Image (cartoon, rainbow, N blue to C red; front, side, top):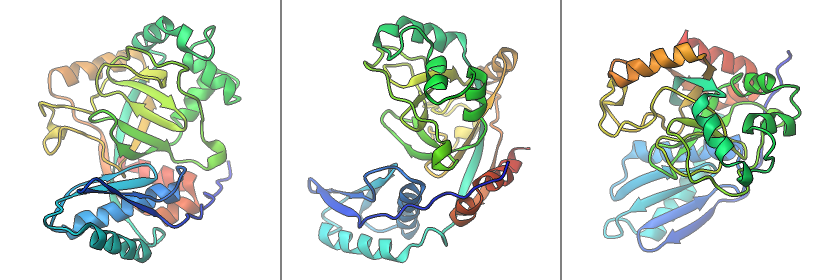
Length: 300
């Protein structure tokens, strides 16, 4: 298959807003795009590297970012002036960042999420089908397996972490015309298993804990994205595994592999298959398929 490049999106001027006395919110775009997200990541990473006195927390999002600061140390208007200068300085085609590529095994159409979604069919757009069947149909796939092959066929960039602690939002690294799109449930579920892999809009999310949810349910991963007690070795530095800018490779597995991995997770011996790359937006924009293949080589 011939690879096509990513169509670049021209961004409007950012919108800067104050949040009470100690927050600044910056909207880079009203809609998600690689350009908007990469710029949010580049700016927030640059702020983090500069270690600006008075900045308490830096929170990149899909097409925006927010800063929490100490108003006794930082003047908010001066901070916005600095952010305007930084935005003008950064060209994401010249920017690179260190990204982890993390293998995320997934048991698609697993028994746990299947049982859950069947309990809530009255809240779904299509009560007579499963979430996978519905998603495959509205995205014009011939079969559920073809749909799963597409979802797991290219890596996903972590664009933000939030909503609940440790929940990664990921956007598949393919051209816009290849993006999968599905609506959320008409009415949210009151239950979702932990580690469920869900999809809403154009985002895949991994539910870190059991709870309510409205994303279409596709499967379950045996690995954790949140380890509050930091018992697993790969959570030594943080209780949250994926960070914005990391890349997740959703890999289809069978029940035997799921059970084997889950056993290692539960006894504390599991080590994640991951590697590090210098992510280069310019190379990704030019040849996403070829670039994805090259960065996934770190998992081999």
